[in-house]
Image (cartoon, rainbow, N blue to C red; front, side):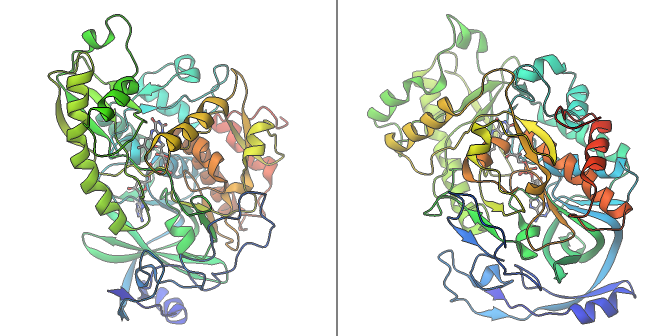
Length: 511
Ligand SMILES: Cc1cc2nc3c(=O)[nH]c(=O)nc-3n(C[C@H](O)[C@H](O)[C@H](O)COP(=O)(O)OP(=O)(O)OC[C@H]3O[C@@H](n4cnc5c(N)ncnc54)[C@H](O)[C@@H]3O)c2cc1C
Protein backbone atom coordinates (compact mmCIF):
# COMPACT_ATOMS: atom_id res chain seq x y z
CA UNK A 1 0.00 0.00 0.00
CA UNK A 2 1.22 3.52 -0.60
CA UNK A 3 0.28 7.12 -0.10
CA UNK A 4 -0.43 9.79 -2.66
CA UNK A 5 1.03 13.27 -2.87
CA UNK A 6 -0.90 16.36 -2.06
CA UNK A 7 0.27 19.89 -1.85
CA UNK A 8 -0.82 21.40 1.44
CA UNK A 9 1.62 24.25 1.41
CA UNK A 10 -0.89 27.03 1.44
CA UNK A 11 -2.70 25.43 4.32
CA UNK A 12 0.60 24.74 6.05
CA UNK A 13 1.66 28.34 5.84
CA UNK A 14 -1.61 29.47 7.39
CA UNK A 15 -1.57 26.80 10.02
CA UNK A 16 2.06 27.40 10.90
CA UNK A 17 1.27 30.62 12.70
CA UNK A 18 -0.96 28.69 15.04
CA UNK A 19 1.75 26.17 15.90
CA UNK A 20 0.34 23.47 13.67
CA UNK A 21 1.24 22.33 10.20
CA UNK A 22 -1.19 20.60 7.91
CA UNK A 23 0.61 17.73 6.38
CA UNK A 24 0.00 15.58 3.33
CA UNK A 25 2.20 12.56 3.82
CA UNK A 26 3.38 11.71 0.37
CA UNK A 27 7.04 10.80 0.65
CA UNK A 28 9.55 11.85 -1.97
CA UNK A 29 10.14 15.28 -3.33
CA UNK A 30 8.49 18.55 -2.83
CA UNK A 31 7.29 21.48 -4.81
CA UNK A 32 10.05 22.62 -7.12
CA UNK A 33 11.51 19.15 -7.23
CA UNK A 34 12.13 16.94 -10.18
CA UNK A 35 14.58 19.09 -12.09
CA UNK A 36 17.83 17.44 -13.01
CA UNK A 37 20.82 19.62 -12.15
CA UNK A 38 21.62 22.41 -14.54
CA UNK A 39 25.36 21.80 -14.47
CA UNK A 40 27.00 19.40 -16.83
CA UNK A 41 28.07 16.28 -14.97
CA UNK A 42 31.70 15.25 -15.03
CA UNK A 43 32.50 12.24 -17.17
CA UNK A 44 31.45 8.98 -15.65
CA UNK A 45 28.89 10.45 -13.31
CA UNK A 46 25.82 10.40 -15.50
CA UNK A 47 24.81 6.85 -14.81
CA UNK A 48 21.80 5.89 -12.77
CA UNK A 49 20.66 9.51 -12.35
CA UNK A 50 17.35 10.11 -10.66
CA UNK A 51 15.88 13.56 -10.59
CA UNK A 52 13.66 14.49 -7.72
CA UNK A 53 12.94 10.98 -6.62
CA UNK A 54 13.20 7.32 -7.52
CA UNK A 55 11.13 7.83 -10.64
CA UNK A 56 11.76 10.27 -13.43
CA UNK A 57 8.59 12.21 -12.58
CA UNK A 58 8.68 14.78 -9.79
CA UNK A 59 6.95 12.43 -7.43
CA UNK A 60 6.81 12.36 -3.63
CA UNK A 61 5.61 8.82 -3.50
CA UNK A 62 8.38 6.34 -2.81
CA UNK A 63 5.96 3.70 -1.66
CA UNK A 64 4.00 3.97 -4.89
CA UNK A 65 6.93 2.41 -6.72
CA UNK A 66 7.78 -1.24 -6.74
CA UNK A 67 11.51 -1.89 -6.39
CA UNK A 68 11.54 -2.10 -10.20
CA UNK A 69 9.95 1.32 -10.47
CA UNK A 70 6.55 0.24 -11.80
CA UNK A 71 3.58 2.06 -10.26
CA UNK A 72 1.37 -0.85 -9.38
CA UNK A 73 0.36 -0.33 -5.80
CA UNK A 74 -2.90 1.04 -4.45
CA UNK A 75 -2.67 4.50 -2.91
CA UNK A 76 -4.15 6.33 0.04
CA UNK A 77 -4.52 10.06 0.57
CA UNK A 78 -3.30 10.81 4.08
CA UNK A 79 -3.77 14.13 5.84
CA UNK A 80 -3.25 15.33 9.39
CA UNK A 81 -2.93 18.55 11.34
CA UNK A 82 0.48 18.31 13.03
CA UNK A 83 1.93 20.20 15.98
CA UNK A 84 5.02 22.24 15.14
CA UNK A 85 6.95 21.12 18.15
CA UNK A 86 10.20 22.97 17.49
CA UNK A 87 11.00 26.17 15.64
CA UNK A 88 14.76 26.36 15.28
CA UNK A 89 17.48 27.86 13.11
CA UNK A 90 18.82 24.53 11.88
CA UNK A 91 17.27 21.09 11.63
CA UNK A 92 19.64 18.12 11.32
CA UNK A 93 18.31 14.74 10.19
CA UNK A 94 20.38 11.81 11.47
CA UNK A 95 22.93 11.65 14.27
CA UNK A 96 25.70 9.52 12.77
CA UNK A 97 29.26 10.88 12.51
CA UNK A 98 28.12 13.46 9.94
CA UNK A 99 25.02 14.56 11.87
CA UNK A 100 26.85 14.79 15.20
CA UNK A 101 29.58 16.92 13.66
CA UNK A 102 27.01 19.11 11.88
CA UNK A 103 24.80 19.66 14.92
CA UNK A 104 27.67 20.30 17.36
CA UNK A 105 29.55 22.59 14.96
CA UNK A 106 26.39 24.59 14.23
CA UNK A 107 25.38 24.93 17.88
CA UNK A 108 28.89 26.13 18.77
CA UNK A 109 28.27 29.01 16.35
CA UNK A 110 25.46 30.17 18.64
CA UNK A 111 22.42 29.11 16.64
CA UNK A 112 19.50 26.94 17.76
CA UNK A 113 19.65 23.37 16.47
CA UNK A 114 17.28 20.40 16.57
CA UNK A 115 18.71 16.96 15.77
CA UNK A 116 16.42 14.00 15.02
CA UNK A 117 17.84 10.48 15.37
CA UNK A 118 15.83 7.34 14.68
CA UNK A 119 17.99 5.05 16.85
CA UNK A 120 18.28 5.32 20.63
CA UNK A 121 21.89 6.43 20.40
CA UNK A 122 24.02 8.73 18.30
CA UNK A 123 26.83 7.42 16.14
CA UNK A 124 25.11 5.58 13.29
CA UNK A 125 27.36 2.88 11.91
CA UNK A 126 30.00 3.48 14.61
CA UNK A 127 27.61 2.54 17.44
CA UNK A 128 24.22 1.06 16.43
CA UNK A 129 25.95 -0.40 13.36
CA UNK A 130 28.64 -2.02 15.59
CA UNK A 131 31.57 -1.06 13.41
CA UNK A 132 34.72 -2.06 15.24
CA UNK A 133 37.09 0.63 13.98
CA UNK A 134 37.43 4.19 12.68
CA UNK A 135 39.55 4.37 9.54
CA UNK A 136 42.58 6.71 9.89
CA UNK A 137 41.85 10.37 10.65
CA UNK A 138 44.80 11.49 8.55
CA UNK A 139 47.41 10.74 5.93
CA UNK A 140 50.23 9.66 8.19
CA UNK A 141 51.56 13.21 8.46
CA UNK A 142 48.58 15.42 9.21
CA UNK A 143 45.35 14.97 11.14
CA UNK A 144 42.96 15.69 8.26
CA UNK A 145 39.71 15.06 10.14
CA UNK A 146 40.62 17.72 12.70
CA UNK A 147 38.02 19.83 14.50
CA UNK A 148 35.11 17.74 15.78
CA UNK A 149 37.25 14.71 14.89
CA UNK A 150 39.91 15.96 17.35
CA UNK A 151 37.26 16.26 20.07
CA UNK A 152 36.19 12.67 19.44
CA UNK A 153 39.79 11.45 19.66
CA UNK A 154 40.35 13.42 22.83
CA UNK A 155 37.18 12.01 24.36
CA UNK A 156 38.31 8.49 23.50
CA UNK A 157 41.77 9.11 24.92
CA UNK A 158 43.47 8.47 21.57
CA UNK A 159 46.44 10.61 20.59
CA UNK A 160 46.25 12.57 17.33
CA UNK A 161 49.60 11.07 16.36
CA UNK A 162 48.15 7.55 16.62
CA UNK A 163 45.04 8.43 14.62
CA UNK A 164 46.89 10.22 11.80
CA UNK A 165 47.90 7.00 10.12
CA UNK A 166 46.15 4.16 11.88
CA UNK A 167 42.66 2.91 12.63
CA UNK A 168 41.06 3.69 15.99
CA UNK A 169 39.27 0.80 17.69
CA UNK A 170 35.70 1.53 18.81
CA UNK A 171 34.20 0.60 22.17
CA UNK A 172 30.63 1.32 21.12
CA UNK A 173 29.23 2.07 24.59
CA UNK A 174 32.02 4.52 25.30
CA UNK A 175 31.50 6.22 21.95
CA UNK A 176 27.75 6.52 22.58
CA UNK A 177 28.38 8.32 25.89
CA UNK A 178 30.95 10.58 24.26
CA UNK A 179 28.52 11.64 21.51
CA UNK A 180 25.79 12.23 24.14
CA UNK A 181 28.17 14.54 26.01
CA UNK A 182 29.29 16.42 22.89
CA UNK A 183 25.71 17.09 21.82
CA UNK A 184 24.51 18.03 25.32
CA UNK A 185 27.47 20.32 25.97
CA UNK A 186 26.91 22.12 22.67
CA UNK A 187 23.28 22.79 23.67
CA UNK A 188 21.69 20.90 20.77
CA UNK A 189 17.99 19.99 21.17
CA UNK A 190 17.32 16.39 20.16
CA UNK A 191 15.17 13.31 20.59
CA UNK A 192 15.88 9.66 19.88
CA UNK A 193 13.49 7.29 18.16
CA UNK A 194 12.53 10.19 15.96
CA UNK A 195 12.54 9.50 12.25
CA UNK A 196 12.30 12.00 9.43
CA UNK A 197 9.42 10.82 7.24
CA UNK A 198 8.75 13.74 4.89
CA UNK A 199 9.56 17.35 4.16
CA UNK A 200 7.43 20.26 3.06
CA UNK A 201 9.20 22.36 0.47
CA UNK A 202 8.35 25.09 -2.02
CA UNK A 203 10.43 26.88 -4.62
CA UNK A 204 13.64 25.17 -3.61
CA UNK A 205 13.21 25.90 0.08
CA UNK A 206 12.35 23.37 2.75
CA UNK A 207 10.17 24.79 5.48
CA UNK A 208 9.17 21.85 7.66
CA UNK A 209 10.56 18.46 8.51
CA UNK A 210 7.91 15.91 9.41
CA UNK A 211 8.99 13.43 12.06
CA UNK A 212 7.50 10.15 13.24
CA UNK A 213 8.19 9.39 16.88
CA UNK A 214 6.76 7.43 19.78
CA UNK A 215 4.29 10.24 20.52
CA UNK A 216 3.10 10.34 16.91
CA UNK A 217 3.80 12.71 14.07
CA UNK A 218 5.09 16.24 14.55
CA UNK A 219 6.80 18.94 12.54
CA UNK A 220 9.95 20.99 12.99
CA UNK A 221 10.20 24.40 11.37
CA UNK A 222 13.70 25.62 10.52
CA UNK A 223 15.59 28.13 8.41
CA UNK A 224 18.25 25.64 7.31
CA UNK A 225 18.14 21.87 6.94
CA UNK A 226 21.07 19.46 7.04
CA UNK A 227 20.69 15.97 5.61
CA UNK A 228 22.92 13.58 7.54
CA UNK A 229 20.79 10.48 7.08
CA UNK A 230 23.51 8.65 5.15
CA UNK A 231 20.98 7.90 2.42
CA UNK A 232 20.15 11.49 1.46
CA UNK A 233 16.51 11.04 2.51
CA UNK A 234 15.84 14.70 3.25
CA UNK A 235 17.48 16.12 0.12
CA UNK A 236 15.93 13.51 -2.18
CA UNK A 237 12.48 14.04 -0.67
CA UNK A 238 12.92 17.79 -1.10
CA UNK A 239 13.55 17.22 -4.78
CA UNK A 240 17.33 17.12 -5.19
CA UNK A 241 18.61 14.98 -8.06
CA UNK A 242 20.74 12.00 -7.14
CA UNK A 243 22.58 8.98 -8.47
CA UNK A 244 22.56 5.45 -7.16
CA UNK A 245 25.10 2.74 -7.94
CA UNK A 246 26.97 1.98 -11.15
CA UNK A 247 25.66 2.12 -14.74
CA UNK A 248 23.45 -0.89 -13.94
CA UNK A 249 22.33 0.63 -10.63
CA UNK A 250 24.34 -1.97 -8.68
CA UNK A 251 25.63 -0.82 -5.31
CA UNK A 252 28.29 -2.05 -2.92
CA UNK A 253 27.20 -4.96 -0.75
CA UNK A 254 26.23 -4.21 2.83
CA UNK A 255 27.31 -5.95 6.05
CA UNK A 256 25.60 -6.72 9.34
CA UNK A 257 28.41 -6.16 11.85
CA UNK A 258 28.70 -8.40 14.90
CA UNK A 259 30.22 -8.81 18.36
CA UNK A 260 32.00 -12.03 19.38
CA UNK A 261 33.34 -13.34 22.68
CA UNK A 262 35.72 -16.08 23.89
CA UNK A 263 38.41 -15.36 21.31
CA UNK A 264 41.95 -16.30 22.29
CA UNK A 265 43.69 -13.24 20.83
CA UNK A 266 47.08 -14.39 22.13
CA UNK A 267 46.80 -17.54 20.08
CA UNK A 268 45.41 -15.64 17.08
CA UNK A 269 48.54 -13.47 17.03
CA UNK A 270 51.04 -16.25 17.71
CA UNK A 271 53.62 -16.35 14.93
CA UNK A 272 52.05 -13.30 13.28
CA UNK A 273 48.38 -13.12 12.49
CA UNK A 274 47.38 -14.35 9.06
CA UNK A 275 44.65 -12.30 7.32
CA UNK A 276 41.16 -13.54 8.18
CA UNK A 277 40.36 -14.14 4.54
CA UNK A 278 43.50 -16.18 3.83
CA UNK A 279 41.79 -19.56 4.14
CA UNK A 280 38.55 -18.57 2.42
CA UNK A 281 39.39 -20.20 -0.94
CA UNK A 282 39.90 -23.53 0.82
CA UNK A 283 36.71 -23.19 2.84
CA UNK A 284 34.74 -22.21 -0.26
CA UNK A 285 36.16 -25.22 -2.08
CA UNK A 286 35.19 -27.41 0.88
CA UNK A 287 31.58 -26.27 0.46
CA UNK A 288 31.35 -24.39 3.77
CA UNK A 289 29.71 -21.29 2.28
CA UNK A 290 26.48 -20.74 0.35
CA UNK A 291 28.16 -17.90 -1.60
CA UNK A 292 31.55 -17.47 -3.23
CA UNK A 293 32.49 -14.25 -1.39
CA UNK A 294 36.29 -13.80 -1.31
CA UNK A 295 36.29 -10.56 0.64
CA UNK A 296 36.37 -10.79 4.43
CA UNK A 297 37.29 -7.49 6.14
CA UNK A 298 37.61 -9.46 9.40
CA UNK A 299 37.58 -9.34 13.15
CA UNK A 300 39.14 -6.58 15.33
CA UNK A 301 40.19 -7.14 18.94
CA UNK A 302 37.94 -5.00 21.19
CA UNK A 303 38.98 -6.47 24.54
CA UNK A 304 41.01 -9.34 25.97
CA UNK A 305 38.60 -11.94 24.56
CA UNK A 306 36.08 -9.95 22.51
CA UNK A 307 36.12 -9.13 18.82
CA UNK A 308 34.16 -6.83 16.52
CA UNK A 309 33.27 -8.46 13.23
CA UNK A 310 32.97 -6.78 9.85
CA UNK A 311 32.06 -10.12 8.38
CA UNK A 312 29.98 -11.24 5.40
CA UNK A 313 28.25 -9.29 2.63
CA UNK A 314 24.62 -8.73 1.65
CA UNK A 315 24.63 -8.54 -2.13
CA UNK A 316 21.94 -6.79 -4.18
CA UNK A 317 21.12 -4.40 -1.33
CA UNK A 318 19.24 -1.14 -1.82
CA UNK A 319 19.54 0.71 1.48
CA UNK A 320 16.68 3.06 0.58
CA UNK A 321 14.13 0.24 0.36
CA UNK A 322 13.02 -1.45 3.58
CA UNK A 323 12.02 -4.57 1.64
CA UNK A 324 15.56 -4.95 0.40
CA UNK A 325 16.94 -4.19 3.89
CA UNK A 326 14.67 -6.84 5.43
CA UNK A 327 15.84 -9.51 3.02
CA UNK A 328 19.45 -8.54 3.55
CA UNK A 329 19.22 -8.69 7.35
CA UNK A 330 17.54 -12.12 7.28
CA UNK A 331 20.31 -13.40 5.03
CA UNK A 332 23.10 -11.76 7.04
CA UNK A 333 21.98 -13.20 10.37
CA UNK A 334 21.95 -16.72 8.90
CA UNK A 335 25.21 -16.37 7.02
CA UNK A 336 27.07 -15.55 10.24
CA UNK A 337 26.59 -19.21 11.23
CA UNK A 338 28.72 -20.14 8.21
CA UNK A 339 31.39 -17.61 9.20
CA UNK A 340 31.36 -18.95 12.75
CA UNK A 341 32.21 -22.38 11.38
CA UNK A 342 34.90 -20.86 9.19
CA UNK A 343 36.64 -19.03 12.04
CA UNK A 344 36.38 -22.03 14.34
CA UNK A 345 37.62 -24.64 11.90
CA UNK A 346 40.07 -22.76 9.68
CA UNK A 347 41.71 -20.07 11.83
CA UNK A 348 43.74 -20.27 15.03
CA UNK A 349 42.45 -18.85 18.32
CA UNK A 350 38.77 -18.68 17.37
CA UNK A 351 37.90 -22.29 18.25
CA UNK A 352 35.70 -21.39 21.25
CA UNK A 353 34.27 -18.11 20.01
CA UNK A 354 30.61 -17.25 20.47
CA UNK A 355 28.33 -14.76 18.76
CA UNK A 356 27.24 -12.21 21.39
CA UNK A 357 25.19 -9.82 19.24
CA UNK A 358 24.50 -8.50 15.77
CA UNK A 359 24.01 -4.80 15.09
CA UNK A 360 20.66 -3.04 15.27
CA UNK A 361 21.49 -1.04 12.12
CA UNK A 362 22.36 -2.86 8.90
CA UNK A 363 25.62 -1.59 7.40
CA UNK A 364 24.83 0.17 4.13
CA UNK A 365 27.98 1.24 2.33
CA UNK A 366 26.34 2.98 -0.58
CA UNK A 367 22.95 4.36 -1.59
CA UNK A 368 22.00 7.81 -2.92
CA UNK A 369 24.68 10.27 -3.95
CA UNK A 370 22.92 13.64 -3.87
CA UNK A 371 24.05 15.75 -6.84
CA UNK A 372 25.44 19.08 -5.76
CA UNK A 373 26.91 22.12 -7.48
CA UNK A 374 30.13 20.16 -7.85
CA UNK A 375 30.61 16.40 -8.19
CA UNK A 376 33.86 15.19 -6.65
CA UNK A 377 35.35 12.68 -9.11
CA UNK A 378 38.19 10.18 -9.26
CA UNK A 379 40.28 12.65 -11.27
CA UNK A 380 40.25 14.91 -8.21
CA UNK A 381 41.72 12.05 -6.19
CA UNK A 382 44.36 11.42 -8.84
CA UNK A 383 45.40 15.08 -9.15
CA UNK A 384 45.39 15.67 -5.36
CA UNK A 385 42.93 18.46 -6.07
CA UNK A 386 43.00 21.83 -4.37
CA UNK A 387 39.82 23.94 -4.41
CA UNK A 388 39.22 27.58 -3.64
CA UNK A 389 36.17 26.69 -1.60
CA UNK A 390 37.94 23.85 0.20
CA UNK A 391 36.35 22.80 3.51
CA UNK A 392 38.78 19.98 4.27
CA UNK A 393 41.19 17.44 2.84
CA UNK A 394 41.04 13.66 2.95
CA UNK A 395 43.15 10.68 1.97
CA UNK A 396 41.35 7.34 2.45
CA UNK A 397 41.77 5.07 -0.62
CA UNK A 398 39.12 4.09 -3.13
CA UNK A 399 37.36 1.16 -1.45
CA UNK A 400 34.46 -0.12 -3.57
CA UNK A 401 33.24 -3.40 -2.13
CA UNK A 402 31.96 -5.72 -4.87
CA UNK A 403 28.25 -5.55 -5.67
CA UNK A 404 28.14 -9.30 -6.39
CA UNK A 405 29.88 -12.48 -5.24
CA UNK A 406 32.52 -14.35 -7.28
CA UNK A 407 36.23 -14.20 -7.92
CA UNK A 408 36.10 -11.64 -10.77
CA UNK A 409 34.11 -9.16 -8.71
CA UNK A 410 36.55 -9.58 -5.82
CA UNK A 411 39.56 -9.03 -8.11
CA UNK A 412 38.03 -5.80 -9.39
CA UNK A 413 37.54 -4.57 -5.82
CA UNK A 414 41.10 -5.56 -4.92
CA UNK A 415 42.58 -3.79 -7.93
CA UNK A 416 40.97 -0.48 -6.95
CA UNK A 417 41.79 -0.77 -3.26
CA UNK A 418 45.44 -1.62 -3.81
CA UNK A 419 46.19 0.88 -6.58
CA UNK A 420 43.97 3.91 -5.88
CA UNK A 421 45.68 4.97 -2.68
CA UNK A 422 48.05 7.68 -1.55
CA UNK A 423 51.54 7.83 -0.18
CA UNK A 424 52.10 9.32 3.26
CA UNK A 425 51.33 13.04 3.36
CA UNK A 426 49.09 13.13 0.27
CA UNK A 427 45.45 14.19 0.21
CA UNK A 428 42.62 15.57 -1.94
CA UNK A 429 40.51 18.66 -1.30
CA UNK A 430 36.77 18.65 -0.57
CA UNK A 431 34.99 21.67 -2.03
CA UNK A 432 32.04 23.26 -0.22
CA UNK A 433 29.93 22.80 -3.38
CA UNK A 434 29.65 19.02 -2.81
CA UNK A 435 27.41 19.84 0.15
CA UNK A 436 24.96 22.07 -1.74
CA UNK A 437 22.27 19.99 -3.49
CA UNK A 438 21.15 21.35 -6.82
CA UNK A 439 17.83 23.15 -6.84
CA UNK A 440 17.70 23.67 -3.06
CA UNK A 441 18.54 26.94 -1.31
CA UNK A 442 18.43 26.04 2.38
CA UNK A 443 19.56 22.42 2.43
CA UNK A 444 23.07 21.04 2.94
CA UNK A 445 24.11 17.41 2.73
CA UNK A 446 26.82 15.78 4.87
CA UNK A 447 28.32 12.32 5.25
CA UNK A 448 28.08 9.28 3.02
CA UNK A 449 25.56 10.81 0.56
CA UNK A 450 27.39 13.99 -0.57
CA UNK A 451 27.94 14.85 -4.22
CA UNK A 452 30.58 12.47 -5.61
CA UNK A 453 31.07 9.76 -8.19
CA UNK A 454 31.24 6.15 -6.98
CA UNK A 455 35.01 5.94 -6.43
CA UNK A 456 35.05 9.13 -4.38
CA UNK A 457 31.99 8.06 -2.39
CA UNK A 458 33.89 4.91 -1.46
CA UNK A 459 36.71 7.07 -0.08
CA UNK A 460 34.93 9.94 1.68
CA UNK A 461 32.25 7.63 3.19
CA UNK A 462 34.45 6.44 6.08
CA UNK A 463 33.68 8.03 9.42
CA UNK A 464 36.53 10.56 9.70
CA UNK A 465 35.51 11.86 6.25
CA UNK A 466 31.95 12.24 7.56
CA UNK A 467 33.18 14.36 10.50
CA UNK A 468 34.76 16.69 7.93
CA UNK A 469 31.71 17.21 5.75
CA UNK A 470 29.44 17.30 8.79
CA UNK A 471 31.29 20.09 10.58
CA UNK A 472 31.49 22.13 7.37
CA UNK A 473 27.74 21.76 6.79
CA UNK A 474 27.06 22.81 10.39
CA UNK A 475 29.22 25.93 10.26
CA UNK A 476 27.96 26.89 6.78
CA UNK A 477 24.31 26.54 7.82
CA UNK A 478 24.92 28.65 10.94
CA UNK A 479 26.63 31.30 8.87
CA UNK A 480 23.72 31.38 6.42
CA UNK A 481 21.27 31.80 9.31
CA UNK A 482 23.30 34.59 10.89
CA UNK A 483 23.70 36.45 7.58
CA UNK A 484 20.06 35.77 6.68
CA UNK A 485 21.05 34.35 3.35
CA UNK A 486 21.01 31.04 1.49
CA UNK A 487 23.61 28.29 1.29
CA UNK A 488 25.16 29.64 -1.92
CA UNK A 489 25.58 33.25 -0.77
CA UNK A 490 27.73 32.74 2.30
CA UNK A 491 31.24 34.20 2.11
CA UNK A 492 33.60 31.23 1.68
CA UNK A 493 36.60 32.93 3.36
CA UNK A 494 34.46 33.48 6.47
CA UNK A 495 33.35 29.82 6.39
CA UNK A 496 36.98 28.72 6.16
CA UNK A 497 37.99 31.11 8.94
CA UNK A 498 35.32 29.68 11.24
CA UNK A 499 36.27 26.12 10.33
CA UNK A 500 39.87 26.88 11.19
CA UNK A 501 38.78 28.31 14.52
CA UNK A 502 37.04 24.96 15.13
CA UNK A 503 40.38 23.24 14.49
CA UNK A 504 39.93 22.19 10.85
CA UNK A 505 42.99 21.38 8.74
CA UNK A 506 42.85 23.84 5.80
CA UNK A 507 46.42 24.32 4.56
CA UNK A 508 45.44 25.89 1.22
CA UNK A 509 43.39 28.77 2.52
CA UNK A 510 44.81 32.15 3.44
CA UNK A 511 45.06 33.28 7.06
C1 LIG B 1 29.68 -2.52 6.84
C2 LIG B 1 30.39 -1.22 6.86
C3 LIG B 1 31.71 -1.19 7.26
C4 LIG B 1 32.38 0.02 7.35
N1 LIG B 1 33.64 0.06 7.86
C5 LIG B 1 34.16 1.24 8.22
C6 LIG B 1 35.32 1.30 9.02
O1 LIG B 1 35.91 0.26 9.35
N2 LIG B 1 35.76 2.51 9.43
C7 LIG B 1 35.16 3.69 9.05
O2 LIG B 1 35.63 4.76 9.44
N3 LIG B 1 34.06 3.66 8.26
C8 LIG B 1 33.55 2.47 7.86
N4 LIG B 1 32.40 2.42 7.13
C9 LIG B 1 31.81 3.65 6.59
C10 LIG B 1 31.06 4.47 7.62
O3 LIG B 1 30.70 3.72 8.73
C11 LIG B 1 29.80 5.11 7.08
O4 LIG B 1 29.90 5.44 5.74
C12 LIG B 1 29.53 6.34 7.94
O5 LIG B 1 29.13 5.92 9.22
C13 LIG B 1 28.51 7.24 7.31
O6 LIG B 1 28.22 8.26 8.22
P1 LIG B 1 26.87 9.05 8.10
O7 LIG B 1 26.79 9.94 9.28
O8 LIG B 1 26.75 9.62 6.74
O9 LIG B 1 25.78 7.88 8.17
P2 LIG B 1 25.46 6.81 9.31
O10 LIG B 1 26.65 6.42 10.08
O11 LIG B 1 24.68 5.73 8.64
O12 LIG B 1 24.51 7.61 10.26
C14 LIG B 1 23.24 8.05 9.81
C15 LIG B 1 22.39 8.29 11.03
O13 LIG B 1 21.17 8.85 10.61
C16 LIG B 1 20.09 8.13 11.18
N5 LIG B 1 19.00 8.21 10.22
C17 LIG B 1 18.96 7.69 8.97
N6 LIG B 1 17.81 8.00 8.37
C18 LIG B 1 17.10 8.75 9.27
C19 LIG B 1 15.84 9.37 9.21
N7 LIG B 1 15.06 9.29 8.12
N8 LIG B 1 15.42 10.05 10.31
C20 LIG B 1 16.21 10.15 11.43
N9 LIG B 1 17.42 9.55 11.52
C21 LIG B 1 17.87 8.88 10.43
C22 LIG B 1 20.60 6.73 11.40
O14 LIG B 1 19.90 6.07 12.42
C23 LIG B 1 22.06 7.00 11.77
O15 LIG B 1 22.23 7.21 13.15
C24 LIG B 1 31.72 1.22 6.97
C25 LIG B 1 30.40 1.17 6.53
C26 LIG B 1 29.74 -0.03 6.48
C27 LIG B 1 28.33 -0.04 6.03
